[in-house]
Image (cartoon, rainbow, N blue to C red; front, side, top):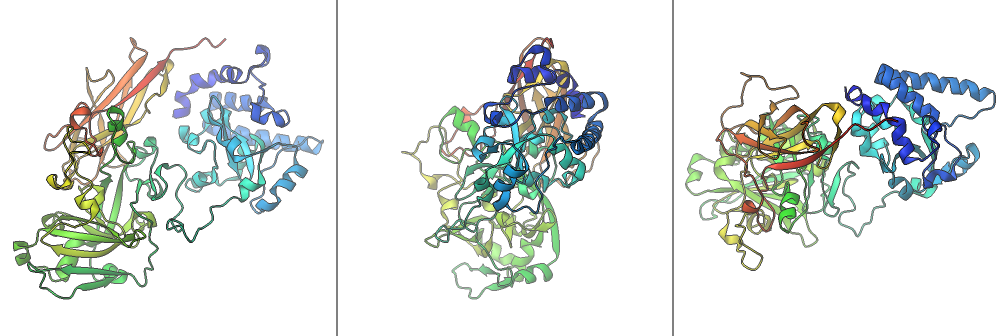
Length: 594
């Protein structure tokens, strides 16, 4: 459908190319010069690309693929008479022989990874690498069956993305890619691998998907591109935001032990319950909860734009929705000896992680006892995420899931649980993740005066289109997408969207699964709406403006609404950023094709 909507752009494809690669106008439809990086190679046959574009315009994406395959087979036949056809490097070819084999098998130029990385846009050209080859796929972007997702790999390798989408593992896809080969990747860049440094506490951190936008490397903190968030109601594990405070610990599941301790009003109770991973899996019923986790700093960048704050510069992607499975925290506390009488003195449940700094300080947090012990609180000791073993970055082998509560309390790599009359003494409970008045600065802040963040306020954001996006007037309409969520189990009941900066509003269609939410659909029990809602709205392009200011705001079941601006909620740590989300979209007028 994206391809069909982009047909006007396909019709102007050669004019775009002639702008990027100046040539004689009469030859523009079928020829173009290389950029400065690729001038070192032989001439490229741009007529093939234009043929593919015309095929796509006439017959759709399927015909593009079929036509490319037919064209490639014809060129193979031509090769018998002496013409050469570029081949993809064999998957069994070692990287050490790439340089020599490249020079002997073709006259294509050699490029460094830095040179490839400079080609990330349609203006500069879109280059990717695959098994040692360099490919200029600029002309294929508009025809890609997966739409603009192909741009996520721009300037880098396509293998991590193809590993997620098995449809690419087909011969005809590889043959289409071969049409766009412009060179070989430098041998040393192919060999380059991240070596483990035993003196580096982060050296054993797991690999992460390259699409993640890194806010901090050590400890690792990253978020997905916004458009990925609205693609699926359940956020895939690899795209779920990563928020680590310390190095990721490597824990042997066979020797893992979870300690559960109930202190008593005077710390008089002795002993503790020790549970293995098998105990948690086999001695307690397995429960599954779909819940959204959001970092307290999500959308901090919006606050930072208004006035400088301290903290990681998160965009709108420090949030995700997952399906979590494990033992109920309530069941484990009861097994450890908790009784209703303990509510007379106990107020908090503390969690300690197994991640630690070089001094041995571990991450810690706590939640109110009432949330932990409630039958409706749905707190889990999770060992599965989205039907799979809990990933390393998300707390393997066990993490606490506290639905409706800030991500900082969903402690990962859980090692100890303590029922206590006091909060956790951890830095992250006492001296971080708290909100303050806009008038409070670093000279006057007193963390003891503010409560630790638990439930989060109502939130929503626009994932598509991106801020600064350009749409063609010929498209006639634009589809807006986003997410909305509220803490404490309060259900999102409405999302209002404006395209004129908030002067007029329309109601978006909500999705509580990967299908549209219909009137009369089964709602979660009151106070147990742990998962987000995705929203979508298609609107006609306004005729009287060249720029739209798109705004969204959500309303929850308690009629909490987002504030309209940042400054009244600004705080020095940049947490709890939930003002109306705004993006500006430019409308591009029709251009004269000639």
